[in-house]
Image (cartoon, rainbow, N blue to C red; front, top):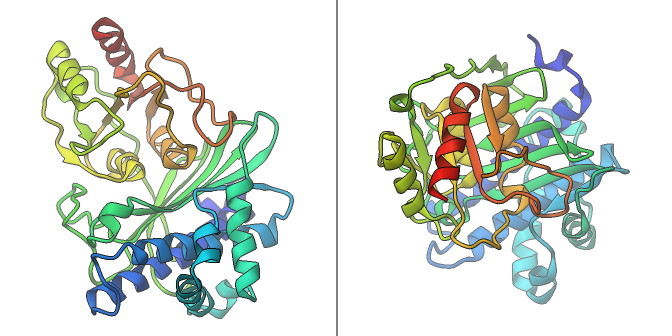
Length: 353
């Protein structure tokens, strides 16, 4: 199927181009770190990449869809306080373009520092509700691993009335030569991969470059396993929000393989690991009963996992509602697994909790 023939084809084209351009921007920051132009021990490269990526994505989306809400992680307060940080961010935003003239014409860039700041703040002011249309973005998901030159993602999703309709994730360092995603096995020669999905029409993947959009291939759906022994977990040992000890306990309770085969810091990359990286299961049992995830850490990635054959629910088995603000307010924890075995995981969670 040609992804351009699916519903939301215009939204998909703009989103894919915007994410590719922002991904190129983040690669430029990493190149500056590698060449010693920016200090790796300083947090400013991450800050610059976050702000600049958010500004470019919102500029492109807001120009074409001015009535849509936009939910972004960042606001401009730090830039308004720090003239040097503002200058460096503006230099990056104003000089990052796609090399293909026709593709770049479809996008928009801010014309001044003040416009850039206002665009960033559009993201800080946005929210998702049960009756609006909202773009959700995380300009750099995985900031800690980004600055180390490891895996991270540039994320954009379209949510309508609380339901994900479109997802585009740019993974600039994604390298699948081993069939698995690993923090330290990165694409150093190219631009990584872009994974995208339209609800009800499957998920696709294409290499990212510096020009226009390259051809995409459809991602195969996950095998529908029924045996616990075939579970293959992706997780994060360093996580501060999830109780990985409980994850281990659930695996032991079920008789499932453990420890997890793939460890990734970026929450969004864990969905990509399920879609294309050999894993098939993700569990999130929060450390605190009050914990709720930010929507930008999951919107988009969830849709890609669903479009490759997974069922996603909270720990009580309820569908995830993306229409309750800037967090997944009604969602306590998460189970992501092939539809055929999701019920067994859900039952196991209820037993150990």
